[in-house]
Length: 328
Image (cartoon, rainbow, N blue to C red):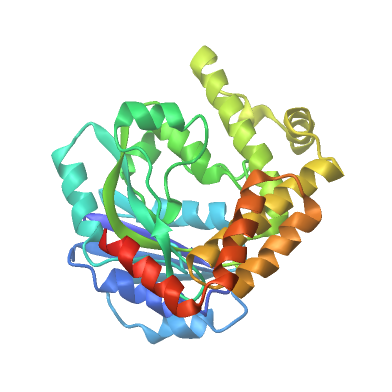
């Protein structure tokens, strides 16, 4: 029996799929099975997957069901003591599984472990290391302000989902955030303070139109967590779709203004990513889209100033300044 079940769902992910699969197959830790769900892809994804003959791969081809249902299918057939997630456009560094297994083996009170991910742009250029909390009590506190665990990087005990249940598809855009909350109510959570996972910030895979919905559903997740604190259970299973929509409209009304602010924030994030990757032209394009929707954002005008400096300074001087900074 494998000690770890790596679960990955992919939909039309041909562009980065081979790199993602190879990064798992080349792990220093060998005792795993790799469950890959092809969620109704219409590109070359299936052809790429069927090229692999590694016996550790368990391939499932299915009609399109969405991320939550696909991951739940993988969880139900997983045989490992531990479950590791993987996203089809990211990269796991060779020692990732080994170090996560070691942590869970040595800390029986911890149910879920994540990693400080190295962010990269769509071309694979490093953007920066995402740092957050590592101690259980700190993570429990900041979880109320946002999701601080990189979904594709986590490993958790199968016992966790046996206890709290699987991803809940009613909480679209925030199923993982909801699962971390429910696990943290019974188990310790932590992050490994090493860049063992590379998370790709890819405009093609970020649905900018869903950012507003994601913000609303994250607020709903926190509301349900408060209900469980008071009553030991929440009412999600009793809610119909129209009930959920009414609650969402109460949390954050679906006005044009709110939707534009969310979209502007998404464009600004992509502008900052492009800037950090050194792609100033692309950064300017995303930034202009953000400003066109929302002029009154301090972060946006800080980036305007940075870009103006970059274009005035010679490129060689910019590289020299960056090299001096990295040496320090």
